[in-house]
Amino acid sequence: MLAQGRLISGIIVLNAKYFPSSQNSAAKVGATSFAFSVIEVLQDCDAFRGVILYERVEDLNFPVITPEIRNSIPCVRLSFNFGMAISMVQNQLSAAAKILSDYQDGSGPSMLYYQTDTLLVYHPKWLPGCVTHHGPFYKDFTKYFSAELAAKAFQGIEKAQHLKLQQELNIDHLVHSNNIFVLQHSQLQRNYLIQRGVDPSRLRSLSPPISVKKHTNHTRSSIHKPSLLSLFPDPCRTLIFTAVARIDFFKNVDLIIESGVEMLQKGLPINILIVGGDIHDEQLRLQLLDAVPRAYLPYFMTIPKLPKNELYNLLGDARENGIFVCSSRFETLGITPLEAAIKGVTTLITNSPLVEASHYFPAPYRFGNTSSELSETVERLLSTGASVSEKGEYLKRVMTNTISLDVFRSNLLNAWSEISLMVERERERERGLGVPEFV
Image (cartoon, rainbow, N blue to C red; front, side):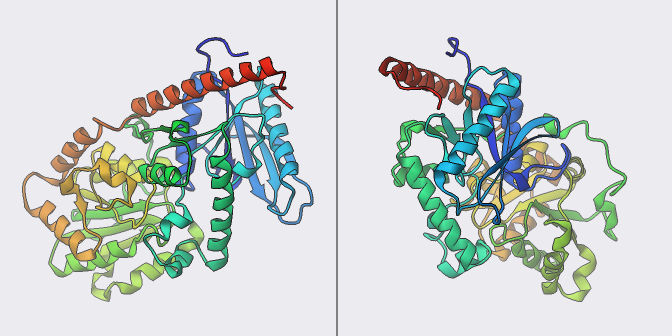
């Protein structure tokens, strides 16, 4: 039984391929960064019990769980596939949770916190759960984009249809599961889930976990020493740059390339840097440069995504004369542009209700969804008013009024406390009815 005011312990459920190889590794996706911010908060409250890392293994007949330690964090790997019986995966998911709970202090069942809805249909009915949806919903996406573009965005028709099917199953499960709550950082996701029938009383809002403190005390690696800016022939030109985990339809990085060419044609003194994709995505990065006239190629650079300390070093270097651009078409949050803005970098973002982070930005820092509108916005920033660095400092002051790690921590703990209380009340009700708490 929980003591009054005590938080129920939490176990994070995350795709194994998104778990970083080290604490300084580049975040594979936004869910990685978000999950580790949650872990920090729960650890501070002694309410964190570990991570369940799930992976699809198609040649298995039965789900397998394997305890392991990753980056000093207790984990259990769950290997399964979608062809297995739901009850089999459900029981192993429950067993994995029990291993992690018993490993710490055996204080009883923990709440499973899913970083996507992939495993919701397997959620043990006898355990409390919550979920944050980081990626887009297929059906929501296709309200605004064609099926052909959806296939492109979700890496093929087969993957798109599989995603659609799994999401429909899991949303239906969420609608009918009174013991699964939603911690949402996106109004886009909230609106869609309510439209689909999820009870609003089971949704809690979280501010993005962005902190200036996280960007300090990073020692510069020798890999890009002294600065990425110095790799350009003329490093004194204004840097137009972006940093994304993936180069894909959602991020719309092509728009920055196209706009960069337009800016150079206007005679604007700029360099363009695209940071994104894994090391093996070199072909994708080279394809971005196909649209650049040969005469302008010296002003363009594309490199793989950076480890966290190198990314924060880049943001620090760019404060003086750099402009970060988020050109996304559809973004359920957008952590990196928020980090850039909180760091004091002048940051521009697509002015769209489909890009969640955009509503945090003042109107002058938003641009329309065409390359010409981006180039016009950059030209205005460079030619009028305060310097680029002063505009970045102004943006930082505005943004820190609504976004901080303290706000995120407060949101998370309030939501977790409310859920803990509801879970305890439900357990007391079940004990009164003679229903077992934990099977």
